[in-house]
Figure (spheres, rainbow, N blue to C red):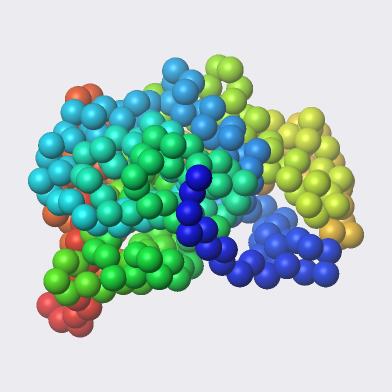
Length: 332
């Protein structure tokens, strides 16, 4: 069994609903371009659907990242070294996380996730694969700095953020997150904190669009699950069957965008407040920015991380970057 579980405080309102979720949804639906932060896609059902997405033929990032972790394990061991507490931002992948843990001989594993049930299931499954490894799941919103369990406080740390989730955020939010990760991992002058992060690469737009609109419709269900969650948790009346999943490439910002598009004029309530959408109007639910070497290094550097090494898969579709926490400095 997993040990040392900690739970971060989540502020609930009088109806037992996450205040931040309600506020983000209501604010987002009032905007001219309706938009809801992508993090709310990942309730327990959404997290399970995303695991399904990683197995569809069109979705290459998981296969590419797994290839890197498998083929370059000796290089990871050399660059990272043993004895670090691995802090994973998001519940552990059943495939990728064990590959990293086997490669680097960590001292402990700390998965962080806002989806509590999914977190505990993932932590228990990993504990069974690594019976001698201390596992400390922490239920928390890792978009903010998180207090780690006392058991790992003095250990040198490696943050693990696979899957190019950083691409879901606009640049200012990505910088804020990377800075909060640095704060979560803390400062250890003898062994500075490190971060191993996945970043997807710019490539043919048709390959990208297919990866976010698979033929089996799994990504579409993942996207529409957000509307179902709103209906369930916020007493919503969104007609889910009238929303069509759309993946589009935005060349200006080098990103795939996911939208929920109204197929007819619709009206609905959320938390007692009325909303409407005209046919063709969308709710923007997710971005997935794609990177070049320069843009990925710039993002990390702006956030207090110094890139150390970069690995690509054999088809040059995806990158894993190892970075080290740098001391703050004001000039040049």
